Length: 206
Image (cartoon, rainbow, N blue to C red; front, side, top):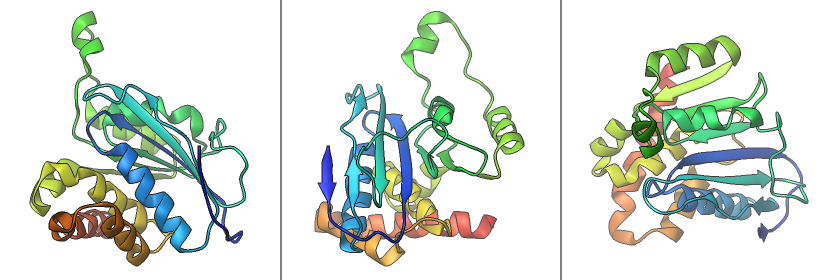
């Protein structure tokens, strides 16, 4: 468990899920550092699941006055999913007021192909979520990442989408600073554009 330092003005719980190779851990670290830069306490879980490419991965992160990093059932303020099925996996952490931000581009898990099960229709996932939750923000982050310069910037597209949500406790400027502190300078321009693309995608939908 990683612990960082101190501001008690906002408590905010985040559940992040996706598949290995999508930058989930790096996203969590950047959020944690941005929170630290703004003076918040942060607790972050270690990785859950299989970190190799293609395996399901999740992390849990709390900003504010928390002792445990585990997001309790129905207590998440934000679920950030890098893949459509992964948002469904995290719904036990959600309540009606939880913000759901997720990439709509599917990565079909090997378990589905092995069992012969079909991948659910993306529109069905979106419609079902919108029927049950008030703040649902699907976006094709893969397209926005490619527009920024590389599919590898997908995680920064999704982070930009988080920042666009009014309830998210961290500023876009601080998140950009934390990104620069954690990624090589040659990737800064691309990732700044990726953050901007995700940010604008959500702002345009509000």
